Amino acid sequence: MNLDDNIADELTSEDIRALLTEQLSEGDGGSPAPPLSPAQQRLWFLDQLEPNSPRYNIPSIAWLVGKLDVPALQRTLSGIVNRHESLRARFINEDGEPAQVIGPEDEFQLRQEDLTHVPLPQRDAVARQLVRDEVKRPFDLREGRPLRASLLRLGPEEHLLVINMHHIVSDEWSYKIFYRELEAFYTSFSTGVPATLPELPIQYSDYAAWQREWLESEDFQAKPQFWKNQLAGHPVPVNLPTDRPRHQAADPNGAVDFAVLPPELATALKDLASRETSTLYMVLLTAFKVLLYHSTGQTDIIVGSPMAGRNHIELEEVIGFFANTLPLRTHVSAEMTFRQFLAQVREVALAGYSHQDVPFEKLVEVMQPERSPGQTPFINVLFLFQSLSEMPRLPGVKMMFLDAATDTAKFDVTLFTAEVEEGLVIAAEYKTSLFNPETIAKLMHRYEQLLRDIVRDPGQRVFELTLRTDEELKALPPLSRLPQDAQQWQDLDYWFDGRAKQAASNASS
Image (cartoon, rainbow, N blue to C red):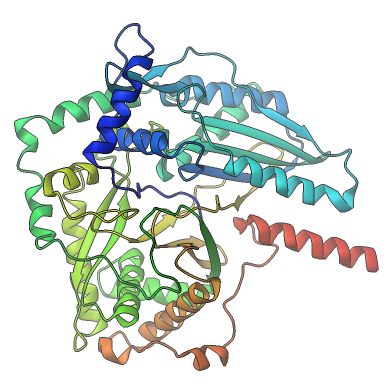
């Protein structure tokens, strides 16, 4: 999973002053450029401190089968980029402050690689490596655009489209906009029917300027009080048992493990959510907090949860970084039933939603919590429930999304969940400096078994929802992977591995 709407490192004022002093003389000059939003500014500083890192790349890969009109695709990408100023932005230093320079509308360059000359036994291996390289290739925010696109031709009617955006201009919601517009523009250019996309009421730079002004206004001053009350006492982060001690220096290296829960379990979880006047997201988050309670013994648990951050209708069709992270704090006891704990999580989540307009960066600035190197204040574990982008319908072309990791991790553990036709995908991104793959695999397996116990009887008390031991896990069937013929989403490496097995089978028969 790769749509991660969060910022992991905490900068000190000394870091920021040093960077600005160093780069003040490098300003691009000219007229004043639009400011960055607070979230963008933090990402910009992190990029200066850790250059050439793919940590904030957000890649998306689509497998395209059919008669692809490549010139129409080229025009489509140009149409999207020219429609959204954020995708034409460069990020510079101007008079001691980061700012964005919006480039002119022009023809976007789609990078193309024709692999049909590569012998079939090696073609997929070459394609896999090219995709992996592109996913992890860093952005130059000062000189280059924050969007890249590559098209790999695997056969006469088979392509891989690799889109890569930097988090400074994108989030999960932005990708949904991107693919809706890709469908509209491509259909128009390939069929000659005009696209009917309304004019954007604002651009992201307008929003960034408004937000910065609002954060300095009197209207905002009372807003952080809710979160001050929620986080009173500066609670400690989740202290998961690690395989290795935490180092002082931030380590960006990470990995992802994934599995799929069967449709019948996903249906049972949705039914439970409906009966409890809750949502599937809330049920899955509550179960995750029970897992953390049993894994750590902590009763005071904060889990970060990203929200879309688009509270105004004018923002709904704009590509940009709007997402905000909410630190959701709950208290669990062994005698509490799951149903009671779910009610608490629901109340905390709904209250958080109604106060999500306070940027996490501003909250940290106001509360000044104690900081640890390489860790976000308050949060070191994240939970996301994602609804995958609706599959674009392109004339004569079928699509499926493939997910590729950047081999980085922003938090100790991030648990992704997403509904697909084949069930419920769960994926854990984790820091490899702290955890072995076997540890994360067991954590995910215990989560699955915990969900099964919960749907059987949500009236069980938390202490009764015990986690499976290592020996008990060994006796259970392993977690399932998505079938190779899945229609909506697959892990990139799993997809390539399945093709290799099929090719070997065909060769031997």
